Amino acid sequence: MPFLLLGIIILFLGIFMFRLGKKTHNHDFELGSMGLVIGGIILIILYGLFYRGLTLFGA
Image (cartoon, rainbow, N blue to C red; front, side, top):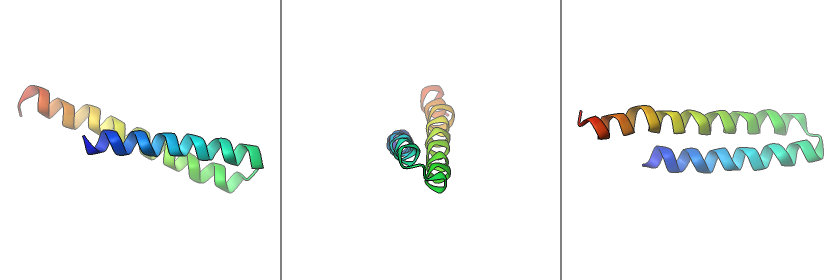
């Protein structure tokens, strides 16, 4: 559960910061926020593949 919650929070924070960087035309801010978006997606995928798979299949 913590991977899913952290992933969703980081994903939304990254999207918000990316839009803010686009609005202010700050390219470094955009790159950093893309890292947050990618990190959030990775956490969600880890939750979906590993934690859920182990919980559902009883391993």
